[in-house]
Amino acid sequence: MMKTSKSAAMFAKVDEWKNSGKTLREFAAASRLSKSTFEYWVRKRRESLASSPAFVELSPMVQPRVIIGATPKQLEPDAQAQIVFTFPSGMCIKVYG
Image 1 (cartoon, rainbow, N blue to C red):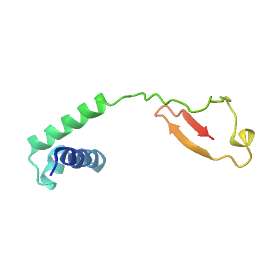
Image 2: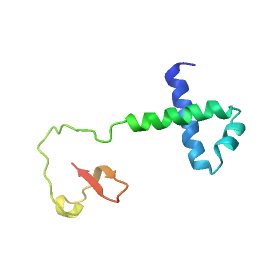
Image 3: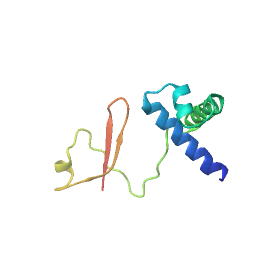
């Protein structure tokens, strides 16, 4: 198994564990991993998420038009959001176009 593929598989296991409701020890045992090996991958996943960019700059191909508080019907009849960004705070950014 290639390194990136193993990392992806183990990161998926860590994410699965976080949603499982099981303790780390229980999940590791059920997955046939030693507790220390699974702790290693939990730490690597945490580091991976911490090093991921929190902000990604997008270069627009056209000049964006910002209408604060506009509804899709005000923008264009039958407008459908093509991209929706929803943040943990509840703020939502919809991109039409």
